[in-house]
Length: 599
Image (cartoon, rainbow, N blue to C red; front, side, top):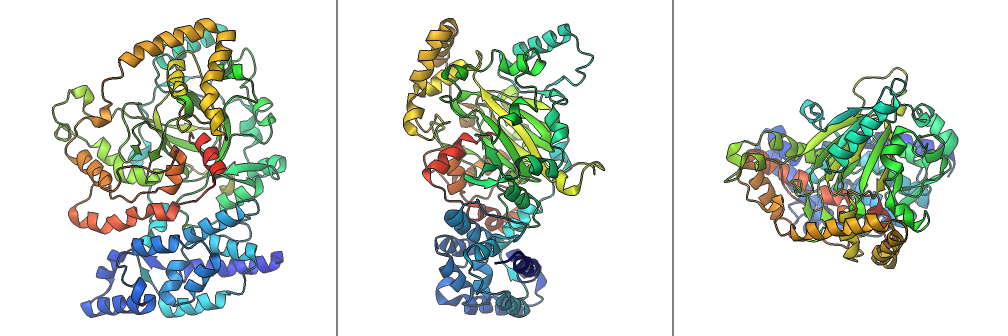
């Protein structure tokens, strides 16, 4: 297919998105129709259009679950041609997203040519016999479909980012911006404070402006600059490799039907110069090097080729982000923002965030909601929790002790070992005249995990388990199980005193691990209702690792604290999210994703 024909197809696709995909929540059916007879007429036309079998599924989620199991594009395409209503449901973009990724991956997914997954599939497979003419006819006859399941992606993509979500800054900060005025004594003071108050106590901190003078911030300020340098390089996106050209076209497309946006999260950085030549990470004597690189990465004893994945480059569009997770192998992490704004919220390791369901050994985690859905469902409730929400607890234990902040270009955040965290890429607060709109829509960061003296006891605990689902960073499960032995052997050869000290701390903490985590304490009121609703839906996450559960087991739940009438309206809408976001990947892809569960 020629580029000109693709362009023509793309124009048709835009018309398609505006016209035939006119969808409203099911509850609107009861407000927009004046008489009961009109409502019955619509429901009757739905039954006639879907047929006897599919119309028996009164809940759209059940119908979409059936369609989700269709693994052949031609079968799904034929279903679209059965009737007007079948066309609406079988054109759902997430169904085609799964089919496209399973068959083609992302290697040639160029969204400059086609903006939705269905049209991209047609172009790639040359299945262009199903023309837009049929869709135009459907549009003229159909008008509007009332369905929570079909409306959910639009609802998520148009959630308002409330002022209360972004106005709180409770993570402590250290000002590192004025590097020219800093003396050696100032840097030693910053390093001493970081070690004593934050790293040793396993507490988060934002180092404001620490990376402000990195060459990468100015050099990669525009998409054109990145594409000139790395456009043809391939990166890992959602477990599939694709070029940066293709990924940026995905970020910049106009599409509000993709509620689970793909992040570029690559542990095998395309070019080492992204780290060595454009940052100050490895510049000896610099403040960043002294804080994180000089003595703070003991996995280096294994050698660069044998150590687990530990450094990543991250791209993402506005409103994308990572769901709640803890970083792998008990490590701590730093995250440096090079472009954009990131909203962080962090919970201590003994407080599992509401709406998050880890297994007993934390080997798998189910987080049914996207980051923005989580804020919509839980954030305001957490802020408004009062004394009546907790029973028989001391004041210091009455609420979740979460911390939050926003990091902008040049800021570095320290993420302590085993802290739960969730990140959202925020749209720009103000229009930057120096940046085009497309440049403002792409966020970029570098991040790395490390083993230090302070978190080594936790790392040893995880490695000692030899649980291949808890240990990550390798594609081979055998390597994961043997990581502990290899690490201990090298540490005894190179740093025996540090290892011995960590072992002693590990022995002391083991004796104190009898106390139950705070997540098991009794809570009443709104938070109890929230958790109860979610727990009624799922008891056990499926799969072998955290990311597999995040991508495969999007479990339905109603978690917003609404009045009874509102709750009934919102239940099916939010509960459908796992069908809209589900992505099947192979074993290698699953492990690659597990390595990239941190932000």
